Image (cartoon, rainbow, N blue to C red; front, side, top):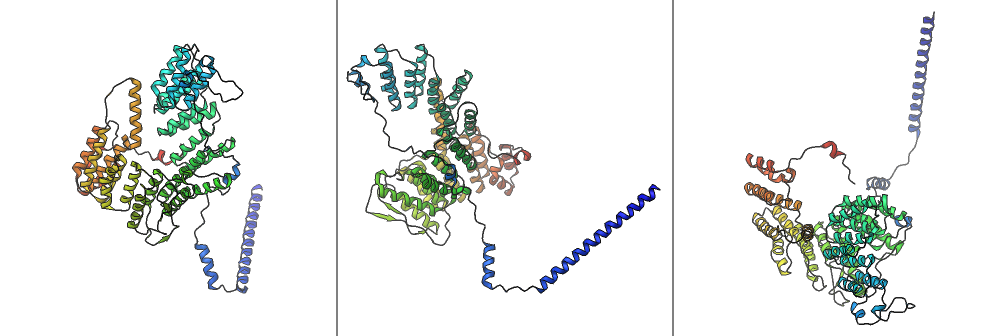
Amino acid sequence: TRTDIFLLLKKRGLQEDRTKKVIEEIKKLEYDLESKLKTKNASFERIDEQDIALIYNELAAPMPIRPKISSDYLEKLKIKFLDTRSNEQLETPVPVAQLTSGNSVTQTDDNVPAPTGLQDLTLTDFEQLIYANALAKRPIEADQAFNLMEKYNVTPSVRSVNHLMDAYANCNDLEQTIATYKKLDQLDLKPDIFSYGSLVKAFVANKRLDDALVIFEKMKKTSMIPSQPIFANLISGCLKANKVNKAWEIFDSMRLSFHQPDEVSFTLMLHACAKRGEVERALNLFEDMAGYQLYPTDVTFNVLINACAKRPDYYNEAFNLLDQMQETYGFQPDRITYNTLLTACARKKDLGQARNILRTMWSDVEKNGSQSLLAPDSQTFTNLFWCYASYIPSGSAQINSPVTATTGVEMSTQRQSLPLDLPNKRSKVVKEAQWIFSQLPDLGIKATPALLTAYLALHISQKQTSKSIDIYTDLFEKFDIQKDAFVFQHMLQYSYNNKDNKMAWKVWEDYQDFLEARRDDTKTGTIIEQKTKDSEKNALAIKEGWTGLQQQKMAALMANTLARSNDLKNALSILSSELRRSATMHPPKLRDMMPLYNKCIQLEDLDAKRELVYICVKEPRNLANSKYKRVNN
């Protein structure tokens, strides 16, 4: 039957499978037996201890760090470098007084006869005169030339009005720029793209970015294509206002819908990458720039180095890029380049490299005198002091190349040098920094708030208690430098570290006086004047470190400092009073108040704990979104 046949075939199939398995097992046994016999009969040479040590060292050696930027990165891009640091002299604008005196006007073209008097000047001559004064930032002379047009029956053109607007915009005179813009309507002239460009420039220069963006949107609605300088001004304004996302939005809009970005736009966006430490994005952008066959300038190279300098993991790449720029394109680093590299040294805590940079700068000054591009300035020593602040002494002497300095910017026969060895104790770190600070007056370096702040920070970082207090109480007054909020923040951090309540209260009172001097709620003047005033106030807050977020951090730091001394009552009072006083300050997050929170638990003060939780902002947990949050937006 069919069933019997099926069972028979199935039985045979099973037997065949078993046979195959047995054959495979036999082959495996034969292979194992053969391997054992070969191993038993094989003879190996004995390895001596030296070979064993060599093998061990190779295995134990750390893996070499693979460079993130290849040594021929720039060479492969085959770009052309344009150095903009040439000493080109701007043509001297013609004074209006020369015209009114009847003297002839010299033309740049020798073949063109000069007019014999004012009556011979044409509209083009007046336009060129106003334009030249606009470039030289001489709005008064430009306005005089414009008024002469009307006096001598030369009808103003849109171009002449635009040049006059540009003259005021170049000097950040927003009110006169707007007043000149209104003349277009009075003269029955229609504004063009350059008219709006001057308005945008003036608004951005006066930190009125929102108004500049309103004009930008109005232009797009009227089917007027914004020019590249307009995009560049808007991007620059966004970056100065720390609105990096808006800068990218404008750049992408220009790139996709209006213009191919130029060198200026690319360089600005490289700066945007540097602000956020987005080195990879900066390198991609730089490669796009090379793809468009645009010429990177010295500014572009410096910004690219700055992007690498912002990231400690790209520390070596910053110096690698500089070497490639020098070898491949003959790029000559300037003071900005080395100041940038000093910030990289501070982040990497590499005082040795910082000393080498200082040696290079001083040596170049000795060699080239006043013609040197590397003459250190106050920013150089500010960054250098941050290197001393971040440096951690190793405890053992490390040899470093000597640094030679002159006692003046010009060539000098009197030399002083830093020790060969890097300082191996905190006291020696501070002593060396103090010696450099003592040289600054002879080097022609003026003290600035940033420089003194860095000098204070290095003493705090290197745990020089008494000297830190002396600098805070006496040094700023000695140099007639007003303390800003960054100084108070560093000194309050000192008080927190040392549980110094007395100093904390002194710093806090000084900080409150500082804020009170900048608090001006009066509403006076025109709308334009009030907006300008508000913009200047916001810019000053960013510059001096007292924005709403920074005030919140200061209040939190003061509260945590008091908590370390068990003063919970005043700690909570500080938080509550600051929130009531400042309209721009938001409640702190509980994670930022952990010293105070833990002290409430330690002292078993449930009421204080409850009040702190009530004051702090409630943070909703959204792990799903935070886990996959993009880094580069």
